[in-house]
Length: 384
Image (tube, rainbow, N blue to C red; front, side, top):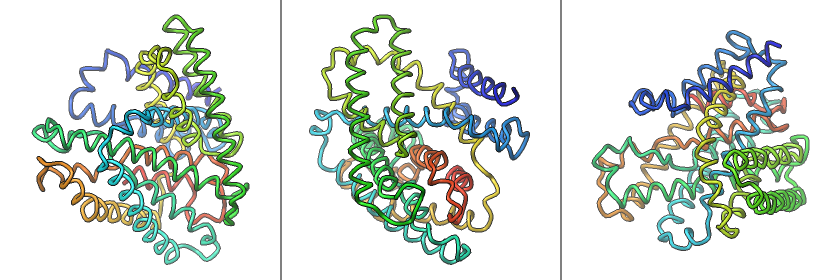
């Protein structure tokens, strides 16, 4: 009963803080950081979790996981909906170049540094899955934050730099989820460190089948749902179906839902326009529920290895953004200057939290051979 009351309180807080009553406070810079940024939700989840007040103990975390799974399906859908073929073909080549360079440099540099730190600081029996954890942290530093306030008011209004950063943000989010989905499908069931390409082929086929089924259901149910409330129920139900199917099959709900979003956005647009209001109404509560779930599931006692990985992620991200991506961005945006790009591009992408949360709720996130438990890895990403 205590766990059910905690879940009810989480959902109620998500709805309350995303309501119109709190809108003026959320527009204030401090309120925007705490509420829209999700950090108040993470703190509430941490207080309710097993490491503080224990409203949700370790045995109750399994009940929280369906909420987190649903939230991950929502994030994957939102990122996939940016993959319209017409939009992608209209983007300048600088967008795709920046996204690919950012992904490769992040994976190689941050993943390599994390692998060295794990082999140096972890126990010998915890190193067999080191490459999985290193790849996860490499994926976490891929991407750009679409929030541009850190560039300052003058540069937020600059068309070239704003559009370029938003475009790179969408593309790099899809690249990050694709990398994480491929990483999960490459691993054998049970979290073995061996790589199976047959598992990759089967995983991609299964993911595509679930996504295509959900897209066809979307097309049909959009015609049936006439009222706004019906469309909202259909949308939430489809997210639950896709995320649940991915979880049962052992694949990434982020990756499968992203494929669903890409397929759906490229279907005939007449029915898709009906979902716009449903998405806008549900987006903020679902995001807050996801952040509360992250707070409940993380373990704040990360130890020396966790602190070392925090440093690795910060150094790796700064090196990639300032040394590799920033020169490309400056050449692409004519009105960008050195001081305008110093801080903005280094902001951590919110996709990192979703990817790590997916690692926590996957079976592979509980492997005892990991140098850090999945809950501690989630805390590392929150600290970063």
